[in-house]
Image (cartoon, rainbow, N blue to C red; front, side, top):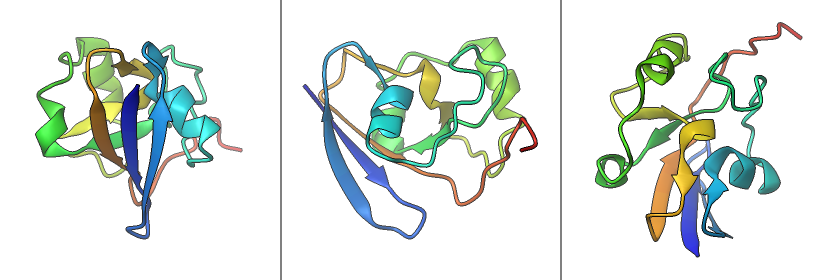
Length: 109
C-alpha cells in the first residue's frame, strides 16, 4: 500500500491509501480531488497537474519529454510539477502532492 497525502487548495491535508500499481490520477479522482484528467492519461492536456512534495520528487522516475512539454502549459507549474496520470504508485510507500491553486480546463467547457 502507498499512503497518498493530498494538500488541498485551502491547505487542508487528506490522506488516502492506494494499491500497488495504482495511477495517482485515479487515486485522486476516486478520493474526490479536483483533477480533471481530460485526456484520460494520454499526455495531451495538463488538467491532472499536481505539485509533488520536494522530499518525494526525486524518488519518482523522471518525466519524459512529452510530459515536460505538457507541464509548460499547466497553470502554476513549478520545478516539482508532474502530471498525476504519469505517476504510478508501485515503488514508493508514501507521497505527498499539492493540488495547484488554479487549473486550466483544456476542453473549454
